[in-house]
Image 1 (cartoon, rainbow, N blue to C red):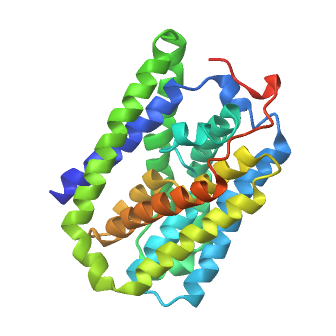
Image 2: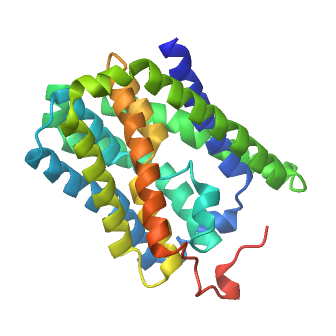
Image 3: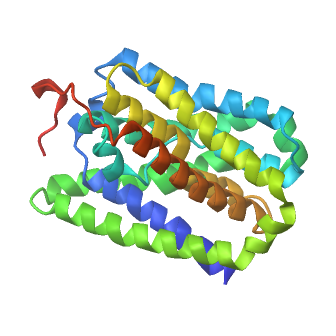
Length: 287
């Protein structure tokens, strides 16, 4: 049962990556590339500042080896491909798509590099192979993304509707499989006690704060980056978790997803559902 649920989680993430490619254009992808300062600021927040701060948290908060592994896996799993529509309501559409796609592609190099940098911690707690992980990420994310963008060129009239439909179905499968997995293995979280939940909550708040502070002057972009930093890339995290025997790491990853969803919702309520107010014609992407 557990293996079937994990497979459903992985397939739903792949389907969502494909749908994002199907709903994206080359102009969407290039939005941040034409704005190098914003690109660097966004990627530094997601791939440098959040992992470094969370690594420091693992040194301060009491954690068992499995909890530390789950927190570090989530810390280096940047990107938010599971929230494209939600994020588009916050920031400029071109910024959001470019951030999601660019961060997902960059993960092929950045995540294994972080595994190497954190080699001592991972060497004690996991059997993650950086090269094998890079191959898994490339096959699971780059392939579906490119395939979706190519199919869009062949079927431009229906690609947008098809993308939205796939996102809706895959999102439902992801939610059902994730909740079922938590129901099956929730006792692992209970047995772990309060410290792991505190660590996951602290990680969520730290990631939200980093994105909010580094997100730039546009309120919509700032909110989008904050939610992106907090969401992390659950697909990459689940791939990394799958290299560790047993369901405990996967259960902790899914618990974080739930915590991040609640914290992000409270953050957006605090922000008043801020949407970008500084959009100019050059900022928009016509699909």
